[in-house]
Length: 119
Image 1 (cartoon, rainbow, N blue to C red):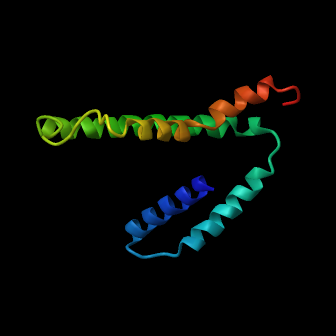
Image 2 (cartoon, rainbow, N blue to C red; image 1 turned 135 degrees about the vertical axis):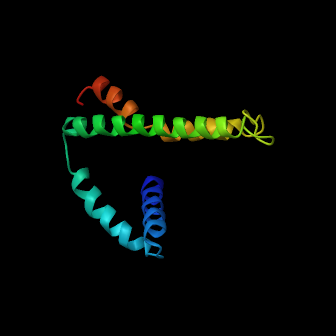
């Protein structure tokens, strides 16, 4: 459920900023339900392997764009900044939990399915 709420809020904020309006989140929820419901009926997850590869390529491109932007800004301001700390020892466990939550999914589901008696 939290994934769906995240997607709705992200798409809403993107459209609101791009179009300069304040839209209704229920509109995006309806569209998302219309897209996700037929996808939930698919029995063979291997049919999504092509789109999974496209998603990985898009993530890789995004990673390089963000890294290039960050390194450019760091080079322009001669360092990270006076109040920026690389490691926060007070809240590092929250970050570890967030990473586990973000990266769960297909990388865990597929190996588990392969080890089951009837995948």
